[in-house]
Image 1 (tube, rainbow, N blue to C red):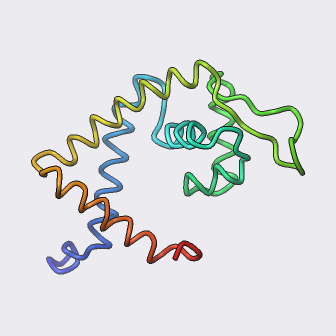
Image 2 (cartoon, helix red, strand yellow):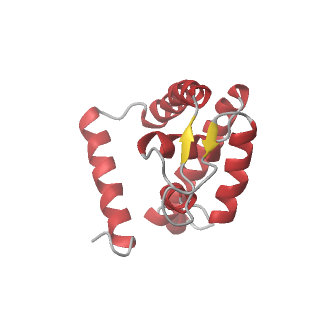
Length: 145
């Protein structure tokens, strides 16, 4: 790969995303989670009672992928899916007490990875990086502008 390609922002974003996920997966594995499962638990904590479709959007996955992740989380007793829909066909999903505990532990792990990623970067640059990434995301997300 040419030097020019490896300096392009899109390439660097993907490279960081892959490295972040791999490092997070390695540290989450001992507590019985993957990064995908962590993302679903975190989305549920921020959106209690969300439907599967809403969760899929929050986690940037397809509904099929989310179904697979939810099935594993449900089997592990970390989430509960309502037996009946509250409105329409959507059945709300919620964290169980065990799910909340596991999420707290997972937050600490992912915070460690994030801190490692940002090591040596002053606080003001960390904030600026977050601002710049938010702008990039907004520019590419239809309807968010």
